Length: 177
Image 1 (cartoon, rainbow, N blue to C red):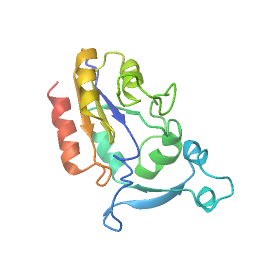
Image 2 (cartoon, rainbow, N blue to C red):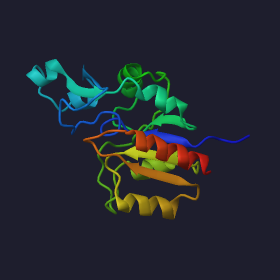
Image 3 (cartoon, rainbow, N blue to C red):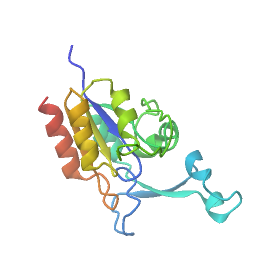
Image 4 (spheres, rainbow, N blue to C red):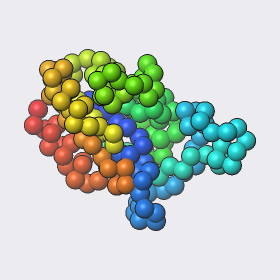
């Protein structure tokens, strides 16, 4: 039996192009959401706290992601709230596995992105593609040196989000395994 590679999905950047120049986001819908991690950094009762975080999501991304030859999982600070708030808005099932970070935004002693080490541990030697807007060359080198299975680290620009060319890259990589 062949095990499909993992596709580890970040929300902010790849699915929510938070740095986009509005109103140029064709195909995206704007949502006001209240993720607990974001709310904890807002002043209770403030306008931002009441209105919620503005999130731009493409309702077509869910179908495109589920059509890929991967097993999907969340690799985001949204954690389980990605299943509650993001998945329904883009058409993904609300039951995707979630990487539960031991500490959000932890400082790494070697300057790696704080998600890198826990993500590698969670992948447990399986092939994976990771889409995120914060991946660095240092993370790519670390994973190449410490992960024996194939991996693809795909940095997504937070102004653009996932694009057609990214879906092509993911498909080609998965089929090359």
